[in-house]
Length: 265
Image (cartoon, rainbow, N blue to C red; front, side, top):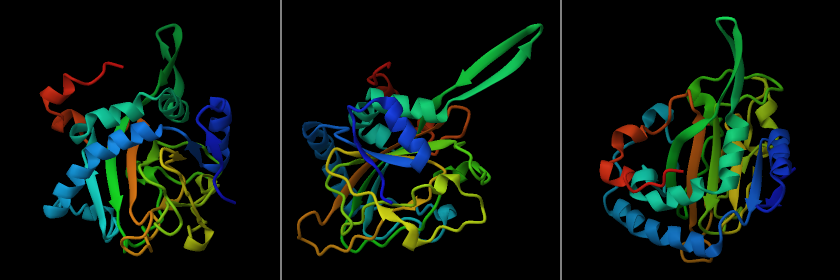
């Protein structure tokens, strides 16, 4: 069973229902071609700089070879590409999916009054990916493992939700993200195996949303350099519960000059 493709204009409850059932969904037409071209034009010069002077961060705590070879990352995209990050975050559909899948509603007594409180989400990670021919497949994993969430069979609880926007066409051959639909409901007795995965193929401008409990990993880019769609561009803007630790400490590395220009909404 592959992931469902559904247009961005579909009722949001229908989109949320698919995410809850399958663990993820592909939203077609999330960004227009013009919007994606604008983001790509911001990203290419940074990718070129990083290939000349690679990021020294190895992030070894995530495991050996967690990130595939022949893949260039723009970490801290929130600062390096603030307009692009804001464009994605300001889409009403992005906000609604993140809020509805990450909100927590609880009750507590305040003296003799029973209060109901609701938390929401906060930006956790913003990163861009240039995946070139020869990139190997990524190990299958759950994103919310960073928050030490135990496996709970049948539970929809997660602390993080991912969103990858396709800057180019994502195909089986160039390494479209591999996912195991339904694995967000697994207990710890089930082990993710590559043969259970399906490719999240996307057209330029489509977006993959998935729960942090869904097993997934980047696919291998088996293209030959120079052939059509040989490089895969992706823009990841992830959110987590607002009481959890973010993957990137935006409040520490965002310059005041950038923060002052960010939209208030």
